[in-house]
Image (cartoon, rainbow, N blue to C red; front, side, top):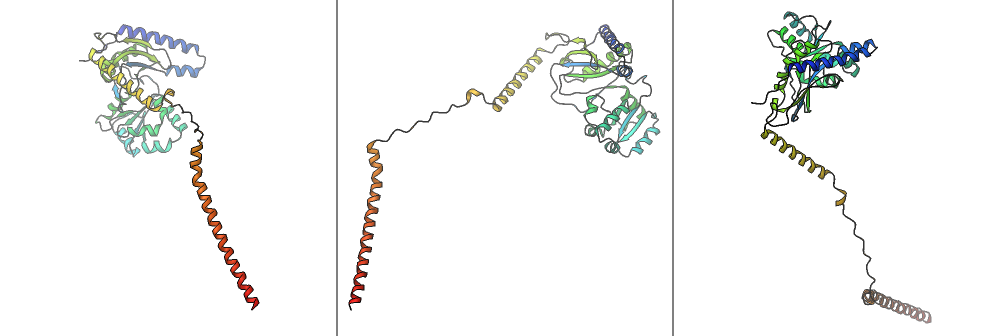
Length: 343
């Protein structure tokens, strides 16, 4: 059985009260009405630090129930449901199932055609408070919506459109929060709004915490710390794992040894890759000085010149014989001419 992580209710209440007091002072110090409205819309998060980061990202989020929904009491809150085509068919389905008019429907094709540009996607982000999506088309959304939705943690929550009680399915998806498993060292889950009361936020944390701890990889033995915070605020601690192996939330000695061995192996592999990519400067081979050839001796010069002299003497004899033969032929022609004239 993995170690269980429990939060002390009194400590949670003190931390939430201190956080809300800090945010209230920030809000009072702001003179701009728009900044005050923005402060009321801020989310409260429960962050969970992990001992070992997950090896891969999990695409499907974990649904976490809340005692008080994030949009309870929000006047005029509207929800956008992204569905398959055709859009009119799903609009009729929602009305037939008794879903309220506060849930709007948009098909994937309309989303693709109307919200191509970045500014249009930003405008869409501000039009609705909550986003839901048919789980059959959920894999298409990262490319259609862009990174802005994911940066603001407003990614649409998946719903099962084949449920008999569709109205209840949509309400549960809207009122819940979600745990997204990434490859980072911590997980952040929305557990309330600044506009809610401290008691409501405490209730949400106490109800959601066990589901969150059970949803992280390797569960309680992988949890290092738990904090509560708001957007761009300080993080107040709620839990810290004991450093000893026998602590209530500590990891077993065997697991710690396995993690340490794995970390050492990964470090060694990374070091080997770095060595292969970049050679140290000390291993560069120095250029050897070029040696000048020694001056040839008299014997070597004589031996080298002998073939040349032989070629020259042969050429002279050939030229001499050629000239003598040409002279003989010339004298013969002259004698022939004289004899012809005499006759």
